[in-house]
Image 1 (cartoon, rainbow, N blue to C red):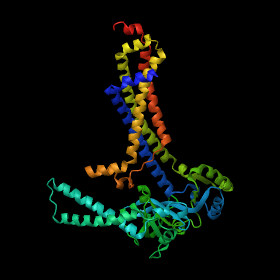
Image 2 (cartoon, rainbow, N blue to C red):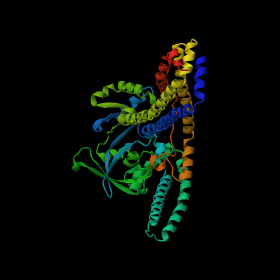
Image 3 (spheres, rainbow, N blue to C red):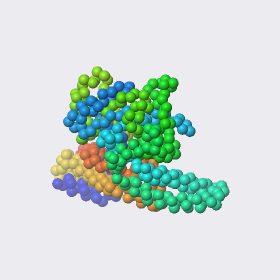
Image 4 (spheres, helix red, strand yellow):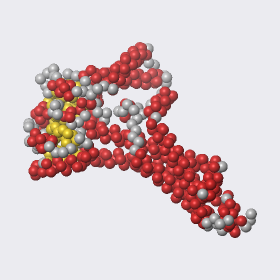
Length: 475
């Protein structure tokens, strides 16, 4: 018991002790914030990936799956499967002011919404118009503000520009309120999705494009676009087709919203030139965490089709490299920040080393009164551990407090400096995502305490080896 009493007495009157605790706290706090925010981004990233693709796909190369209805029936009988739907996908070229590429995906509007989050991503026609108008006004206002900023450097700006800016700001505020309703809207119903694909003004096949693509080419609902595609590298075999733009969708991932377009299964089959064939079958699971188990069951159910080159892939396998890169980025960042804790550990060494020198007389007295080598060592180990534990607990508390209020803090920063640290137009998220994984945080807390004990070991051993006679000789 005397070891704890002496350790705390040595620590409590030293300002540098509190500095060391603060150093450990800062390191732990930053680690907690980074892991929680990166965990939130990772969760959102996984959700967006899973939202645009199925939990499992059963595919066959070169549009070789012709008996897809039979495959769908086999898959639906597998335990753990909730829904299944056929799809066909191929690369497309967009013919406009310049040639751009993307992917056209043919779906069954009656079955696809039960497999992916299509209902959540599809925008109603009025929602598309409001979103496009809002983005247009925002870009125009930003452009004029930059122009006015340049006028301060001597460039003359016409007087009517100020009036135009005022009018656009007024309209932007009005549209912004309508846009907020769009952001919090109810997902489309199954009937609305089907109606979106079937409600056409012309005899052309209909297509629904990503919002970024819609805005980039300044499309309008009911306008026409020309697409090209091919099943081989032979340009002469490329097929060309005009499509009527029926609407837009927004997933929140720029690449998806700029590169992808949806059309009816039959129309895409005719466009590509493979009638009656599909790329594969999308599968929705009751629990996506069971993807590996259900994949094995599906493989067993369609074992007879393996000779034709049928493959079964989970959503993780389809994006293995990307998911590994995100996970590696998260832990690499945490590893780098952990060096803040290491620096704080050197502070612990310095504090305890000076304490040993300063308390040489006390150590001699303790040993002369019967204190053991282990007992003296424990005094300084307890001191180092106390700094580590106190700093870790304080840092964890401050980190969690920051994480749970991070969006309020971001709004406060915006109100003070006029700039949001997390621009929604860049990250495609309305707020900063966070996910506190307490088992994961143990991998922050335990190593920090361990580091504190390790760094306290050298001064503790040095103190325990002091000879009481030498320690008291000059006193």
